[in-house]
Image (tube, rainbow, N blue to C red; front, side, top):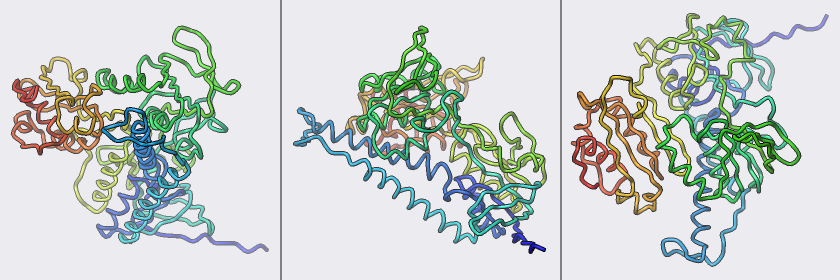
Length: 471
């Protein structure tokens, strides 16, 4: 008779599935609170954001920006009085190695933090057989984990088009961050923030970039005024944009499309980057066996991120929009505290979104066109062309601005938006003002340091009050 091999069993107070910014934050906070934690992830700790998304893409965007600046300085007229004798050389393999070094450092940091919080980690894929039990296929064989509480942080995956399956020259954002050479011709399908962030970066690195978008404008989730400076950058730098166009599929050496006027053409491409959105990762790990309720394509949760199944929570991309790392982290921290006995609920006034295009876009709360009907507003808008810090960084002449939207009756701030170079760092102030329930007079009364971009926020509030100083 063959010997029966028993699967090792781990018991845990809390099982966290997914080691991204939601899962690892939940595990660390739970560990700090003295809970017994097991975290399972089949990939490197840090998840999509750290390993193949937010962090590596921003590293590439930074390197691309530096290369563009040096290339401009090598032009005959120079830049800021800086002249280079020759065009800078780009060793892309070294660029990608530096980018991976950033990822490795942060991955190591997450690993160390989990160890310090006494979190047990299992490297492998978890598959549930019921709501509180899963089997993890590790390199050393299967391990069964039985938990009192479960936190699902399985994240999201890039959407694949049926007529453009990933493979060969068709790549997702993950593939775009793993290229070994800058493509001579890159076609980007989808003009949302992921497609334009990566498309602009590769354009700065020397690629001939073409963008195909089914809707009638770029960045359709943002209002048109915010996206105009980005559109102008694309035009100025030779990025061709086909709006209202359909991607038909690969043909020959490129991508066949149908343009807005019904014409068919083939766009030459070394790589076709498909960035048409992300989908929650809800399949293949036993969701059905857990008996979870669904809210459309997302796992249904309440304002505590609790599912109807007692002791099972879900956080991050898998529970709905916005699919942002900082939302997942906030939910992970909250759920850990709820399991530890604290009273918490997820009810943010706003979750800030940042688009790292050229120039950058930051939005928080409501834009002028999103305010509920019947609510009168006052809007204050201040151009970066009138901000000393922006001009000193050559960041004031791209049509960018900062804008505040407030309720007319009591001056309560309803939203803040900005477009311009380097303005992503204003995201924290935007979030703070909204969460604290600030009114225009609060912002007007805060002394903002000079010279900084934050002065633009102050001026926008003054403008809404009717007495801007510098315009």
